Image (cartoon, rainbow, N blue to C red; front, side):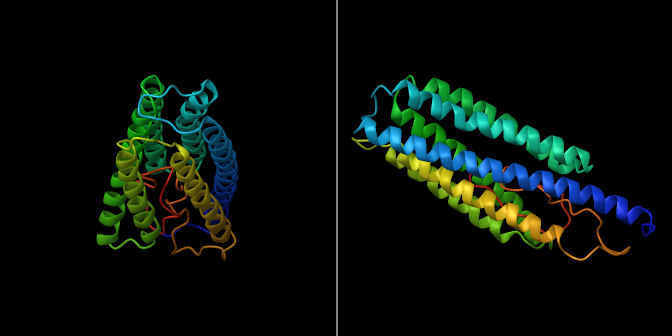
Length: 240
């Protein structure tokens, strides 16, 4: 049944409010990731060459654990925002992502006691897992006729490739964690792209009574299975 004229403005208002909150979250998330990457890169440069079993400086240990914890916080905040719009699919997806990132944070906390090689393997596993889920979901949606999946496919594929690269780096005689910082920079750029696309969608003409009132894909790169069940264009996929 078509929505009444009185219903459309109220639903549009919910979408606009949710879109603004999500855009702000992505901008903050991107800024924090860029600062984190810069600080980690500087810290690793001063640490010099590392071997598989090298002791990591305490400050670096804190930074490495902080990144997946940041992802947990961002996912929970995004879930709260999506819940306000009634987007249950995105809420579930964000909560799943929070669980994955929580496990990653615990794994990193254990890995830092073993050395840089173990840290690289944990980040590699995180990247491959999230990328593979992202790819599978995006391809399934694409086959089902949903448009806007290519950014998600590209970022999912890149996540898998980078994760495998981390595994390869972990076998080298001299190790560096600066690649993890680069990975965060890539994720920050995707957050910025997602924020821009949300802003553009928010400024489009008002929806009519026969159009989708609230696009379900209001989430973004923070969710590897973002917008579970969305009907419409995805904002983008995810690289952490």
